Length: 121
Ligand SMILES: [Zn+2]
Image (cartoon, rainbow, N blue to C red; front, side, top):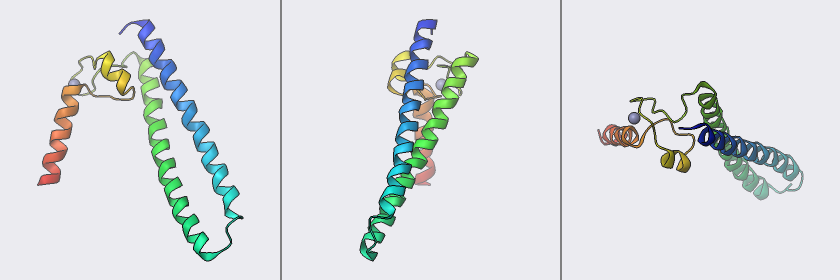
């Protein structure tokens, strides 16, 4: 991968990371605001399930941010775009679709086939 491509992936990943952080801020603010506004028990239950949904969203956001962080780290290390299983280039088209991936399409398919086998067993 050339420097120009690396730079554009770095920008893509940094931008996505910032978006996630902004969303996380909004989620926290939404949670504290709404707490006071729903004093009825039924509403509290609804609020509680909203809260759980929000916590799940935040958990996903947190995991994605940490994947983005390691992708950015790999850009710095010069290992970005290299499959961590087989050491072959992942391919720019695949990275555009999934910039945080660490596996080439072949290794990813192997991994998914292996997961299916394990679930089936
Ligand atoms: Zn591979």
